[in-house]
Amino acid sequence: MIPVITIDGPSGSGKGTIAAKLAAHLGWHLLDSGALYRLVALSVLQKNLNASADENLLQQLAETMDVQFTGVEDPAAAQPIRVLLAGKDVTDEIRTEAVGNLASQLAAKKGVRQGLLARQKAFQQAPGLVADGRDMGTVVFPDASLKFYLTASVEERARRRCYQLVAQGQLKAQDINVSLAPLCQELRDRDARDMNRAIAPLRPADDARVIDTTQMNIEAVLAEVIQVAFSIRS
Ligand code: DC
Picture 1: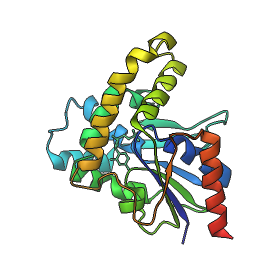
Picture 2 (picture 1 turned 45 degrees about the horizontal axis):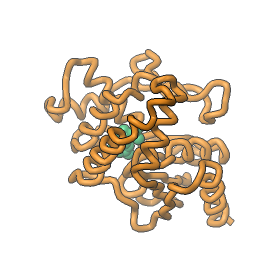
Picture 3 (picture 1 turned 180 degrees about the vertical axis):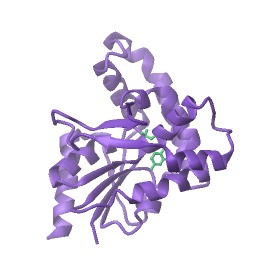
Picture 4 (picture 1 turned 60 degrees about the vertical axis):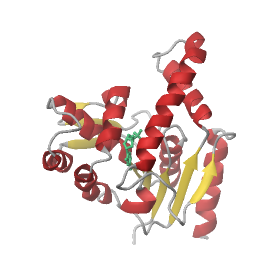
């Protein structure tokens, strides 16, 4: 059986960064399942559709969209992962707030989740997989060897998002204070939508190790995750 480590949690909990670093550390594959939901959202926008489109059509889109992940699964590598949709590089386009919000609405649709299921399972390739998302430990890989659930306070997650936006040149450092309150509200809304949906809601699997990263930096979280990963292997 090819081993899988799942890392679930809300936006801004650090799970994406930790999953990528852990995959690089172990030399394993990486599944960024959120990117797949974002790719469905972008496909929907490109077809001038929206979240209320026919569910069979949305499922078909999720199943058949032409997606490729290229590059190296190491955020520090010279060629980090690029995401291609129908051959076009959409790595940055899928990270916009508009795509993220539509992805969150589409993620509540059974057809979309069903349409992405086989695609996600196909990432389980030797020597192993680190899978990052909301339902990796509960639905997609319930038999995973090790499950983590990362979380952090809404305020801390909003602060991290602000610094990310500043680093990307999308926000001026002096505007951080005014941006925090609306970002907190957006995160609360997205959490509520992800946690309260009927299908595959965001929650820790019963056998997940929960890590609250509010007071921790990335290095400390990574060290804890690696230590647990090696302690269960030996
Ligand atoms: O992790 P992210 O922000 O890139 O995810 C985008 C949206 O996709 C998020 O609002 C919730 C949804 N999602 C999901 O429902 N299940 C997953 N396994 C991953 C993401």
